[in-house]
Amino acid sequence: MAQATLNGIEIDYAVSGRGRPVILSHGYGATGRMWDGQRRTLGDRYRLITWDMRGHGQTESPNDGARYSTALTVADMRALLASLGVSRAVVGGLSLGGYMSLAFYLAHPEMVDALIICDSGPGYRNAEARNAWSQRANERAATLEARGLEALGGRSREVRDALGHHKSAQGLAHAARGMLAQQDSWVIDGLASIRVPTLVIVGDQDTPFLAPCEYMAKKIPGARLEVIAGAGHASNLDQPEAFDRVLLSFLDSLPA
Image (cartoon, rainbow, N blue to C red; front, side, top):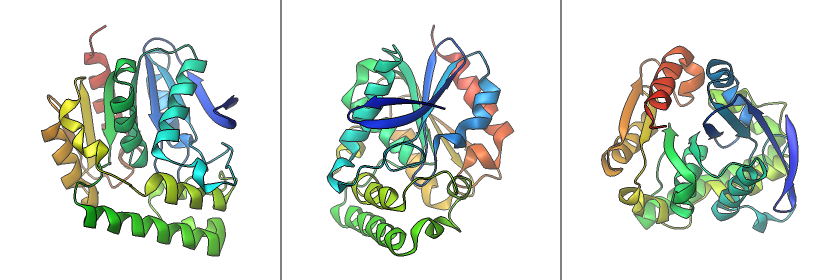
């Protein structure tokens, strides 16, 4: 892993391979290490960039909760790509990382060649549903503050695999309130405006995210939906061979 000071914080990231850049972002409570299997699969065929978001892994966790938001996460992604000399990339992620990838496209469409959205959702247009989601995020933050990192036990696989790699339970709590909680319907309202090839992947056992993924695939023009048999929320970890076949097929199909 390497580190760079971007937007006033130390961001931990890893880069491997060459060719078309692909940046993959992790889910809430996970780290960039969740993509290590894909790093081995892609090898030198693509330039894979992974990273730890604010409050996660070895990236710095600011003490001020106001320094965690969707906008700041998008700004971190842009700064990281710029620091690596990348002007356009395939942008993707799982769960929270998928949501942030959609937000990145809406903010910087000129920097995106294609999107890969895994086991994720676009947020809520309905204010009541959005508030319920944000309430759960706030409850998760309070649990982390009360119990520390042990509160991550029992979560989905990509989160369990990250145990021992996070610096700060307080950073994760801030990230829950500022990044996982949602303030508006900007992302879901923007789906129909997406104009790049888009792959939506979901595990067939990831019940909460099946409908959101189907919805995104219908709303994003020309999007391709792939359902991974025998996979839960961490489809790339649960069924890596099937996931990687779909991933490589999509990447190899993109125009030069």
